[in-house]
Length: 369
Image (spheres, rainbow, N blue to C red):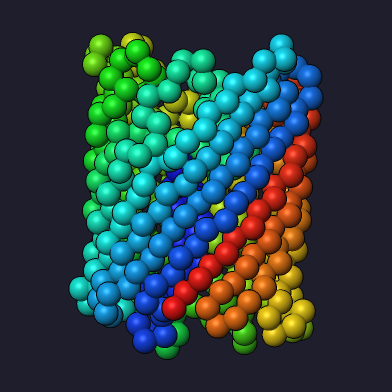
């Protein structure tokens, strides 16, 4: 993921699209602080990778038809090299402004998202190892990118009832990205356009159980430098499924997702090609109320990533993450979430497996009125 991880994480606390406007608050503000750090065994060019993110999102509803979201983050990342040197970068990410208009409430929503280039569009070439290490989906850092040239995307989402209690949703969007210089003093980059198609289904089954599933297909155009060199990224297919089961006073959630990155079409030998890859994740989460205001949510997740240009992809690494979230409702308008996770795993590098371990700590507060 990119900086959208921050935005989508905060928006995940928003009410579902099907929630009645009368029930949804008019204003919701969210912020917090998240710290992630990984310690690596010997064998890599770096031995530690850390990041702190302070995200901020404000959601404002105007009547029953229009919602506007604004999201950004302040992040600080560092990588400790094996030679004892440290590479650091600190600053704001780009700012996303989203407007959603319910053309047909509950059935058709049209969205427009503008990405303002408030982050670091051009970074020193000395920081390239930092961004390369932080960008992998295996580690899943909250902030994987600090900036771009901005962009604009537009799309729609629709929902239809199937039977008595199931629903099917579809959506599509297209993103245009502005040109920028990613490395200070380097060549200008014009990102290719990106089209995305979504299909999802959800509904109850078997007396108290609930299923959610989705498929997302993304296709990107070639990224072109002003020198004529092209960078190619293949299409991506994301499949997601989750089941929620009642368990005593709480609920048990089981989920899995798989993201497949294909080889680019019509790649030539002069182009920079991102190799195909596959990321698989599966997890379980228990939501257990301790009181009317406090909910404890222990979780366990396994993540596995393959990559490589050959006929058979090679292991990039795997990760097991465990920990808990504690959600406290401080009143009618405020909710606090505290997060403490620990990850263990390995990274594959030139045939050698290198261990990694690290915490993810965070606190998020939401206020609504």
